[in-house]
Image (tube, rainbow, N blue to C red; front, top):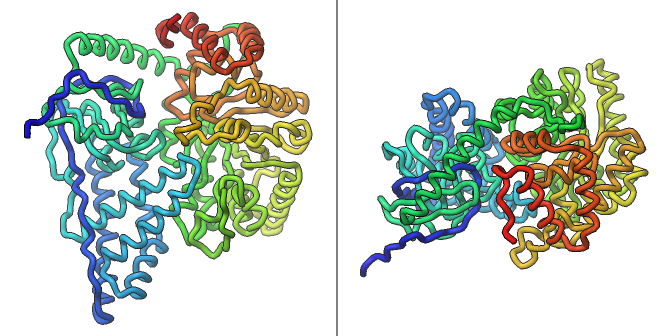
Length: 594
């Protein structure tokens, strides 16, 4: 059967790391190893326990070896994602869970590992937040590494293959460890069938500045080795065997993006200030300590959102202690380059823990017992985190951010628990910042409606637009049938944000915005017009946001916002905004077709 030859075929995926790469295809099969399943006798149990224990240690050694073998120091800085995998492997609960299954079901280590891994994966699959759901991929990569070791196949296909030359890697999937090893000296870019914007593999690609497109669907089955492909990480496109005219077009785009990137990095350390003198703080959203190097490089003035969920998800049953929290937050606090560091308290439901916390079965966990609701119910869990933050606050400018607040009683209960923590630490003569600032996330419409009352209770607000837009418009943005209704410029959304900003300022407190809307440069004039004090976003988006801020007049932004808020159609509002940004920044925003 003759293979079909595709010419100038364009596939659409998710652009996760900007840039253009043109080169020949090198197909990579990550080589899934089927778990060898068999029953064992009582006498064979200890042997299987030893096998899984040895495999876990070897996996840790492999990951440390990958980190140590990276010759480029700049690349080595970004190997922090592998630390997250090592933490999971070192977690006693992970190891003990496999042992328990071996003993209880009398099955071999591979089979027990599969049972435990897929139990964990099922837990992550139930998480509505796509950012947290993609953390489940780390479990999958750890499982695959361990199965390979147990099968006596020490290295993955990528680790065994010497890739030389500027290839484009095409694969069904790549792990963060794979991506770390595919550094810029060996490849031009990559594309995968699966994956999401916030997966750790995508984070690594951005850190290494490798043009990448994920979630393409079936690209690995449509290309052959040595096919010519273009990877457009900006627009999320893969073009198979492009014609000469398209190649020339993308060469020009590559040069433009390269020059643009140099300009952005030049702007990264400059102040975020409009031409008429309005100052705005621009911070970063992160989840791991090792991201701090990236945060500084891309010009963040502080940490607007430090997600703490991974501390819990990586430990599973052994909930983090007060001292676990303290050691992590102290390292954050000691970074002298940051003006402020905002630590968001736990923002997932207890159904994500395989732990002693007994949780009811919920039809809609996203609107159930999660975030501050869970913390108020499980006070020891909440206190361990609050005390860890307080202890660390003696070493730097930490702030506490409470998520998912829907009413004033939740705020008062949280403040009362915080006061108890302070009293208990004072009794033990433990140092902490007695004036630590406490804020709340505004991500529920009810919080917007009573933002005047809430502002009197706290020191700052942070608007989470991802959830606010979903809850306000009753849509699920990951549902393909209604995702088109996810509209940041919907008049209802803008009115809620405007009211919240006005109420915050009337009560003399600051207000930030930390949702995805903050990281999209075209919304900068709207957010400036609304009068926000701070934006927080993915570190890589900061230079582009700063360029937009520095190229605008605050007075103009207020006038533009007035025009946008007069539009009754979000589509008309988007069209007006896109037209204005294309006019003001012709090299950075595409011209809107009439």
